[in-house]
Amino acid sequence: MDKAWQPSCKLESLHLRARVLHEIRRFFAERAVLEVETPLLCHGIGTDPQLDFFTTVYCLPPLRQALFLQTSPEFAMKRLLAAGSGSIYQICKAFRNGESGRFHNPEFTILEWYRVGFSLPRLMDEITELVGELFAGKGLKPAQRISYQAVFQQHTGLDPLVFSCRDYRAYAVDNHISEAAGLCGHDHALWLDFIFSHKVQPYLGDNALCLVYGYPACQSSLARLNAQNPKITDRVELFINGVELGNGFYELTDAVEQDRRFNEETSIRQQRRLPASIKDKHLVAALAAGLPDCSGIAIGLDRLLMLLSGSASINDVLAFPVDRA
Image (tube, rainbow, N blue to C red; front, top):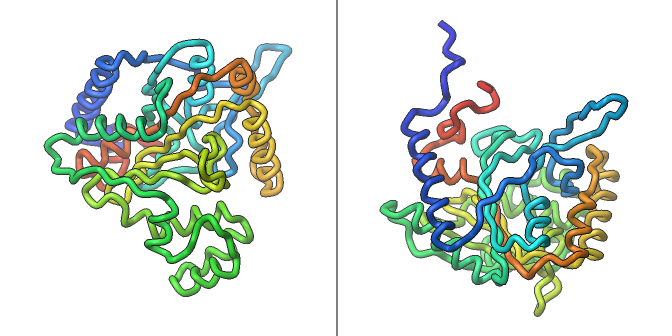
């Protein structure tokens, strides 16, 4: 008998998801953060070379327009911020092409919020509060904070702010990831992503929330440069038990600089023969009009639910993952 119509998760997971969404909404309501909705089908899309996206065609004869399913609601939410919305949050679906596995589904649920007037450390405080409330009774140790440079050097002996292709290749050979040389070439950002994911991330957040901040500037196109050290950006990522949960920034507000970074990433996509993206001109216009000083973060709720429920796979917390959709 065909059972493919049935959900892949237990019904208890549906109840857990409902409770978590309720707790998140209560958390932000108590802080007067406005819940918003923005379109997920848009004319523009992010230019990040590390992300692939879904494209469709909108037909309204005689016009045919390319539209994109958003990898994050970030750009539209920043347009609301520029229009004077104040602090906002959103719980919605996001889409990334070519991503499926233990921690990935091409359609996933995201929590994204922006706090006007918050520095990155202040946002990190609020992240710690929210995660602490969601994991209450789960025995998490106190949250940890460490800079990207410190944790990278601790686990690899390499300085992520100083790129030597020879040193990185030698490290890869010595640490049994020699395939990195062919995949990363002379691209500093790719080397960092590869080494971090294989040799650093698995050790982050041993039964604790670990916040890694101060990422190299070559990795963060939407964060502003650190005021004291232009080699790094004001970016933070969240980890529990080696699982990446979220990515946040002290947001870049300079329209000219943002447009330059988009163009640079578009060129990289062309060089790598990746699918062409269309930069979001509405976002650039919103930044030019004036994005308020703010920090924001996106958290993958499906992964968070995996950790809360002790599940081995993202399919265990989704009703209908891609193979059953």
